[in-house]
Amino acid sequence: MLPSDHFSEGPGPAFGFMFTLVPIFIGIVFIIVIGGIVFNGVRYMKNAKSPRSSEYARIISKRTEVRGSGHHHHGSDHTGGSARTHYYITLEFDNGERKEYLDVKKLYGLVAEGDTGYASIQGDWIVAFEREVSGAL
Image (cartoon, rainbow, N blue to C red; front, side, top):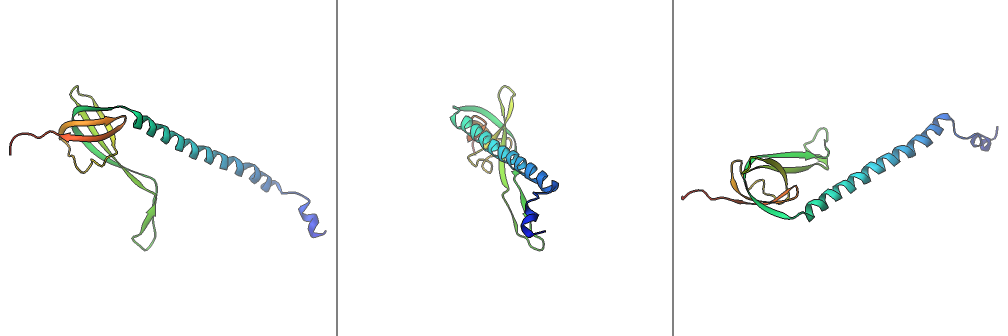
């Protein structure tokens, strides 16, 4: 058998399966990634185009959520990855309704639970909070 004859037999069954499975897997991953990008873009545009309203509210709670992945290198304190922290503030309005908003203007460290005042809301975002000053010093 000549070396060129070996390649004329075609790929074996395992390779045929791989040539079918790998493109399907790559296509599914591609659709998921593009779908996620489109979904986040639509959600961002919805919030960005929403009208701003100012409502009197009380801050009920604050929380953080870490999204993404981080990894630890063995033997060192170095961490890496693409983790991102999102900050949320929950408001309670005069009618008793409570709603959580994404803090897009870095208000998280400037407000405390129990603060009252006027919250500027834009879609699912809290974009400002004007704290009510209580009593004289």
